[in-house]
Image (cartoon, rainbow, N blue to C red):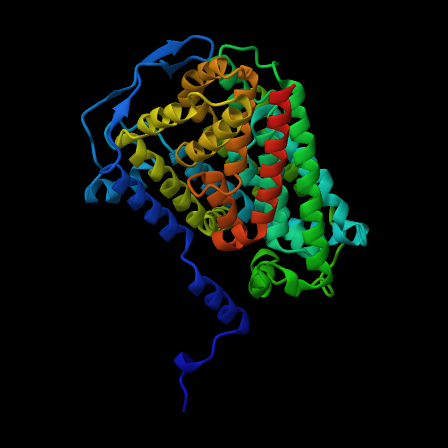
Length: 486
């Protein structure tokens, strides 16, 4: 007689296992990258540029012509083992690395756990889908445009992690998939950063480091922003329409049942009420107000992860009291919600660990110095296009837009003077390359974190996005080439 241990798995569990068995998890990919970068520190000579304080951006920047080799610091086995923890905080100085982002993710998960327990989101989704019946597709251009505005104006990136838990259930209930929801957020904000116009963490820092006004070249960046946004919206809408007409066309077709069960918590739209109670309506208002306050705080009050975490913690408590939950209920739902995003928090630390290994191995400046040599003697068209690809390559190692600007602009921008290329084109090439790479960059916490929340494996994301990356690359190359020729 068969035992319970012999009970066959559910079909969706089998599909999930089949999919995951074909490709390593995000944890394995990131740890493998840590190992690869550590190995490179044994091969690539260690070197550094001298640094000096740039008062305009309030940071130390590299000084052109000062590159010199230094004593190597190759990263060994112990360093590789230490890197995931060092990704959260520096074990020597205790300075924060990605610990603030990881804690924010846990507070966000707790907040969503409390809100989900009230049933307000499920009911609100059913109510919204009833009103939008037949017009759900128009949510895509509206939302992507809003995210792009956030990206181009204040560099919206890590804070987008707060929106996945809100949008994914909505898109699944509308007949789409998790990839559609992830694409709306990641590509929407990402194309905004790629086409940054006044983004202080990319355009402004890079322009100051290149000693030009940040408004120089803004028309060209608007062209890239608008063209890129149109291309991304059309791409996502086309994909979403195909999925809705035929779910087997989904990039994550084998996971649709498990995604629906997880994100919609198994509610039955046919039997559950789609009418919001007064209390649920008030909870949804507070829910939306929380995100509005977060955007206000980040964009105008210099808030970052600690303040945003405090906001979501406070909102969870208020919503729990409004729903008349007991103390044990609120804390229980909060901990359960945080547990759901624990994997995301760990991924954030692993991604930062790659950067820690590279920095400790002293190879970033050496790679930049090598790039400088490849640019000498080129004509303007070849110069600007090679500059784009150099910045793209550096972005994999330095995913931070501000970090890459501080590292590369003081060195690369002066080289343009000898090739007849305006410095504003160097800034545009830098931010376009960095924005493009950060749509897929496994060392960028926003990418690996967003995919983890959406339960989309990295290989499935690449399968979805590579044609779009090709189109964006062609568009950027054409715009940079035309801009250089004018």
